[in-house]
Length: 150
Image (tube, rainbow, N blue to C red):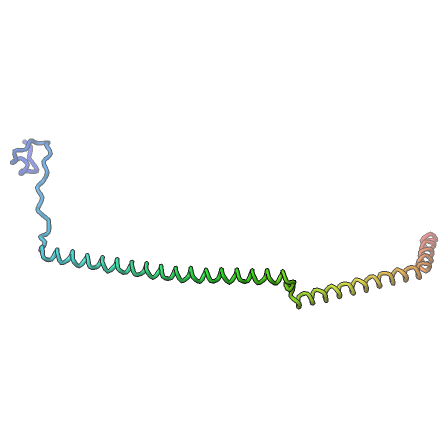
């Protein structure tokens, strides 16, 4: 004979193989209504404080953004004023910096003097070459004759 491992299942009026949910213990915690109201009230207060902090931070950010916008506007005005001043200087011919133009002219003069000096040396060397050409040709002939005699 078969032994039933679940005697309580055999005692019930449910047929074997048919699903029957088990009865569970009631695990719902018992809550004091007064305590629940107090906890909800505290949570609402915490959310209100958090919302207030967010609103304050947003207001400060808007204030900071306004200040940075104002400083950017002032910088743009300064740049525009500088451009206008440069325009007036260019119209009046005073846009060349005197020191820079002086140094530029000085460098050009020094470069020109250096070029003249190099031309002088080049022509002087050409004159020397013409003066010593006959000696050079003589020594070349001597060298050819010595190679021919060997």
